[in-house]
Amino acid sequence: MSTRQLGQWGEEYACEYLKAQNMQIIERNWRFSRYGEIDVVACGADGSLVFLEVKTRRSECAGRPIEGVSHAKYVQMLKCANLWLQMHESVRYKHVRLDVIGILANDEIATPELKHLKGVRV
Image (cartoon, rainbow, N blue to C red; front, side, top):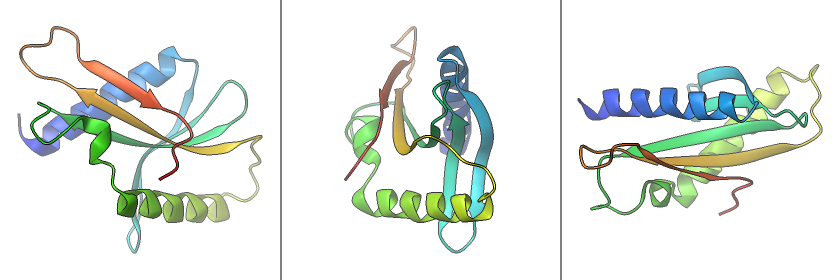
């Protein structure tokens, strides 16, 4: 499985997890060419809007998956989230937050390890 395929698989796995948490997936891979991409935009049962970055790794050699989200990536997510909100200004949400989901998936782990950090600030 290539790195790109692993990333796509991780996003799908994360979306299934989010659905099990009673979250509705609004968009996936929302891209604004100048600033980048948001992996998942979801709505929580409490009416919150959540912008998610999903980081999937095969091993911890380069650190835990969540550690792969740098300050620069956080700033990029923030810019994209603001643009998404501007483009969808007719829709209102109680709360808006940025989350990160890290997934560790390799042949030695029967069930992939998923960690969900809510309301990330870097």
